[in-house]
Length: 190
Figure (cartoon, rainbow, N blue to C red):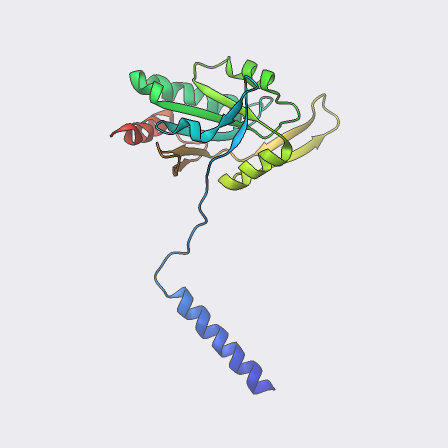
């Protein structure tokens, strides 16, 4: 019995070594994909409708005190840097707070920025599905002592989709408007 356990242990160690020395990086799960939600005009929005444009997708919420307004301001700067090419880029802002972010709330939020953005919301289940597709994360943090009663901690990654709707690059929150604009320009080139 002990010999059989040792043999199994050696075999397992050998297989682990062979897999670990294959020279191939571990495969990353694909992220992204099409989704359908409701936009700031209460109309059905399909991400696939933006084929032919370069799209920047991010997750946030309208009552976010810092990250989301900063991201929207940065993306407004990206659009200005693109000049005439800005019409070939769209921003999709997916709310992770659908209980408070109605289409009207998203519309009012987006009007504060010089940006051709689509704000989208849906049911909690629909939002969770999109969040999972993009590998994003969020967490509702209860704050019963505050008037808002809760806040939402969320990932800040910005996803760049090419004209075919494929995620081709991800930017951390710290990425500059110049870096993002350069990447968008690279994807706009024929």
